[in-house]
Length: 193
Image (cartoon, rainbow, N blue to C red; front, side, top):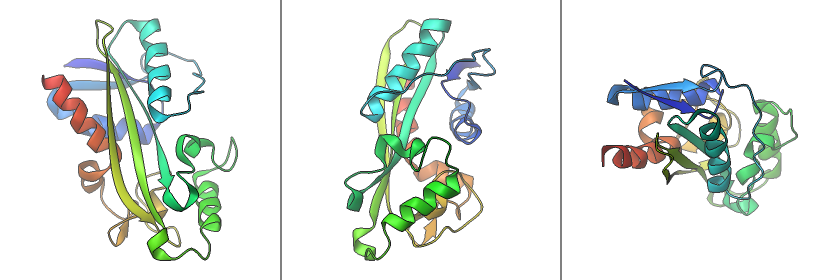
């Protein structure tokens, strides 16, 4: 099994990426599992820049294959916000619930047709030789009116995919349609090539 370090310690992200890549012979390990304890400052202005910053930092320490992603939610009515600030939306230490409430408040009174949004995921894969590859995936939907469901993490409870939130669908369903799944599908094509 080929080992790839995921430039993250986010358990939800690690689980999602492992579930998609492990059947293809890749063992995805977290930074923590790789013995890396560092905070990488994501100061890029795009998802792609932030993914590259993280991947390059981990690769420079390990010289091992790395996947880094930066992803977030872009709400059309808010001109793409929270965007690259999705993680820090509502303050540096805001909980997922607080971020969701902030977003729902900002969309208070906004009609259904103007609540369109997309999850966007940019990935940077650096192979064992140091070659960089970039892919992007998106998943369109809309912002609901209240949190729904118990699955997922982050903005999943308010992101409506069809008539259910991402937190109401199973991990298997989400892994087939999510922004991260779409980016990983593109990455798999690269890895197979």
